Length: 190
Image 1 (tube, rainbow, N blue to C red):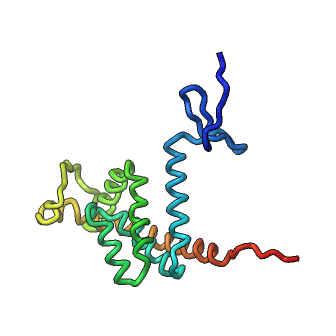
Image 2: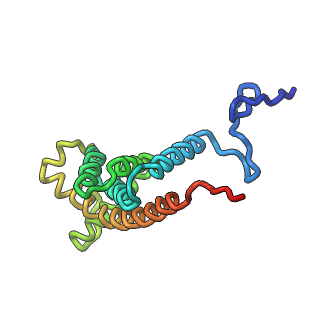
Image 3: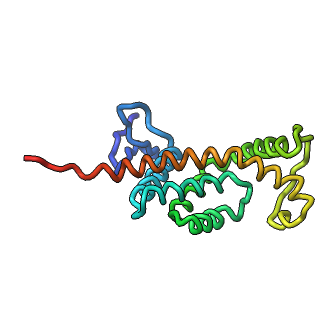
């Protein structure tokens, strides 16, 4: 027994199953990817419509991306907004860019492990020995043993990923914002 498709807003309903609209390019995206695409589009439009210079928006985005890769878990947003304020760049762009790392949150343990290994090698000239990493709290930042053994190498290693990512973000965002601003509304000619 087949049921008829009923249109509900932008979705098609088939019995109890809701599907994303079909496009000529291929099959519909799964629900989580549709939400991710909407979230990215909304934040992209927010960044493009900020009333500020392209340099300020791009610098704020680069600062946010830089702090997104650091292991300063609870302080990332505040630090990015503070540094954006010091450099007179856009604070909203910095806050949006630092929260962009929430998308790759499942990958962050692997990224932190890579940063730790690179930072340990940069500081000590050798690969790290096998260590046990337990629960790290904010108070562990204050204990010199945990800081020197775990957090400092990760912080140094994060610079090898954060600096190139911030530079690339600055260049791409400045180009995107400048291009969006130069494209004015279409002018009708008779």
